[in-house]
View 1: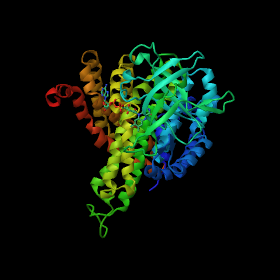
View 2: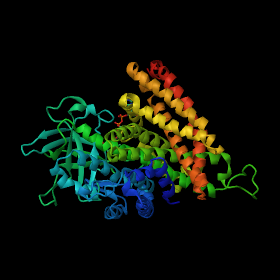
View 3: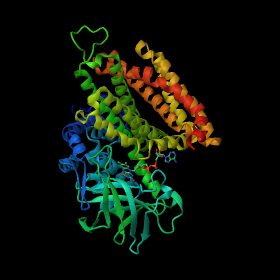
View 4: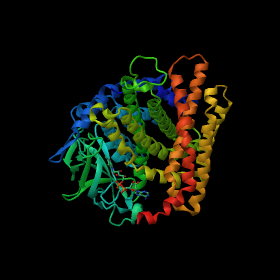
Length: 596
Ligand SMILES: Cc1cc2nc3c(=O)[nH]c(=O)nc-3n(C[C@H](O)[C@H](O)[C@H](O)COP(=O)(O)OP(=O)(O)OC[C@H]3O[C@@H](n4cnc5c(N)ncnc54)[C@H](O)[C@@H]3O)c2cc1C
């Protein structure tokens, strides 16, 4: 079964979880008024469904091939990429000064979901490019921007992110790549980077590598890292592509999923040094790279949503077709479609509601990012920026964790056919696996949430988020619709569990760091359950209001069903997670007897 973009649900989530309607009224989203968002997303959906989705299986089967230092992408990739550039899809959020459309991140979030649901291995290339554009736009000199940015924005040249080395993954302190100053203001770069996504390919005539390296006199650790722009081909004064730079691809990984995305070992400076230019200031490279990584972390969270949506659509179609056994109270002759069995319904609803919750979290995070730039009041911009910072690790890790769970349930729904490759369900599971690992593993996201994000504004940012969730629970309590009022108790318990776990964490951070770190992963999961459950409830309340106003759209009942299932079956895990956070630390940290 092919992919169909769930446009109506995506828009409903944008309007009622990410506050699109309110933003249009306030003028924050003036550029999305009068059906502009709907029109753009409908066009994006066509490209995702008709151009990218049909290449997904072929990409998985063919992969990307390296021969004599040249990487050849899967059949059809090159043509699709040319159409991607021609359609302007690379330029949605970038600044108009460099040819971008300057549209909100919320729109790009919805597009990113569609691109990645259709074809994650293809879409990973532009995903990283968006982050690189952000970093160059924010930190590079005007001269570098003039040479590179317009071509990066259009997609004529792709970009890569080069952090990882054999001994430096999560911990960049151990990074060894080095840079030497040159008399003309450029730098010579030497070193090896591993796992570089689209480090080499045949899609474009040039590739812009953003590379972290150390200067000879740099301070030790991450305070001594600088960021450099290193093109595959040097650029002539007239903007044309010139001589080959001293950077080459020495290998392409064989891996579990996203086969068509070349994961490259890159060697810089084997032949005298690769020419590079500094982005930002010397030794401040990590801060510049964080501009790129923050954008990419939300996008990777959206990959989790995307692959979950694709797997859910696939599993639902199979469950409606496949006949086995007789469902309780069946009146049909012979076997029933498996979707009528309560256990299969449970699997379907788990997939549906977890996907919906992750989407709501990611879109809310994108909305906060927009508001951090677009609010007219400086205090409101700061508040939105902190909200975005708080939610980004949750968006990344919760959504990619559920990506693994949902795609695995998708395989389960297919029975034995899920385990063989022909149905495609297995590819989603294999592709989904990486998203919890790259862009900072989900363990690192949980640590970021607890140690850096909870303390923002002395804890006021997280408390405001919890107050927002409590507001939705209060609205549920006051509603006259029994099906929604029923959600107030389980969601209220979930939010209060998060509140108590947050108090525990803020307290532990001061004097028992190891306890806080031991509970970081269950804390992030609890945060996702509470934020996701409250956002789904807000969507359900809006759906109920529209039904009461006479809107007969059957999708409203499905939105209420998703929120209800999540509150009564998924958010109910909150109590156990709270206990893991507040009482589980010793059982984690006092395990030397087991691990010795
Ligand atoms: C397909 C693919 C594409 C990639 N693309 C890129 C790319 O384009 N650019 C790039 O630079 N990199 C890329 N990477 C690298 C990726 O970002 C790293 O693999 C990731 O950051 C983890 O680093 P590592 O593999 O060294 O694992 P490690 O850092 O060795 O981690 C191993 C385990 O230990 C845990 N751990 C490590 N340190 C801590 C700590 N302090 N506290 C708690 N737990 C910890 C981790 O969470 C993880 O579970 C890619 C990797 C893959 C597989």
